Amino acid sequence: MNANDLRRLRNAFGSFITGVTVVTTREADGTPRGFTANSFASVSLDPPLLLVCIGKSADSHPVFTAADGFAVNILAAEQIDTSGLFASKRADKFERADWYAGPGGLPLLRDVCAWFECGLENLHYAGDHTILIGRVRAFDYGDHTGLGFVRGGYVNLALEQEAVRAAATGVGAGVVVGAIVEHDDRVMLVQDAQTGKWRLPASGLDGSPGALNQLLDLLAEFGVRASIAALFAVFENRRNGQQSIYYRAFCEAVEGEHLFRAHADLPWDKLASKPVATMLKRYFAEKENQRFGIYFGSDQSGAVKLIADD
Image (cartoon, rainbow, N blue to C red; front, side, top):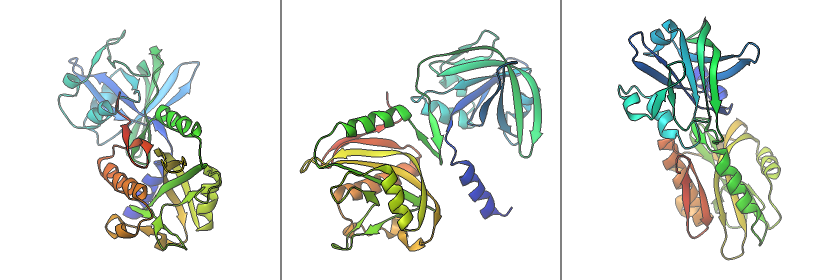
């Protein structure tokens, strides 16, 4: 594959929403080692087996392939910072993390959704990764909500459910359901035939109740097939009580490239409303930092709830 095909394949793999884990072990002298991974899966209940993948280029690859066991920590929604820490090359990961020795002596992180201590059952070299198959020796779990990851960004399903419920309880002039649809680092804009202003694609703008399936049908009419990634904003129009729900979405196929604008080419002075401009500015800022949140409030004021917030 050429470089472009590899990038597209990475994007395709990234369309699958996963949890986030930190995999840990110890060196022969007892030094703890760990890395962040979303390539985790259960394999078997009887015998109890699971797997994780580690890149052959990873600094800790020789340690994990030589160790007789490893632990998997499934991160909670509040542990984005932990995910970033163990995805880094910092030498002080375990000085900064809150951890303890598990029943088998392997490093376990506190306040995770679940953890598994495993003996190394087998390993398989597969392309540029190694598959570690572990036999579960000890495990536990709690009631934390898991941290999700899709399309290069984190998602918090508990926050999204809370936001949708908040919008659903609103009264007024129906619900608008829209999306910021991205394609090759550009976003989709639609021009209003009457005003000439540019807006985000949305259903329910005519006063009828909007819905997600209507939004997807609308995108299809423009020749755009998209997948919804995560919730982005929930707000009320103070003037008429109309509720708006906007998602982040990613284009899977498109017939009209002209529908998409890069950040530098956005018609800021011709956008349909202040909320549209605010959402676009926030989207590009959060995309750069890979720290997405969900906005709660009105079209006048509100707050962004970051996924890592308590």
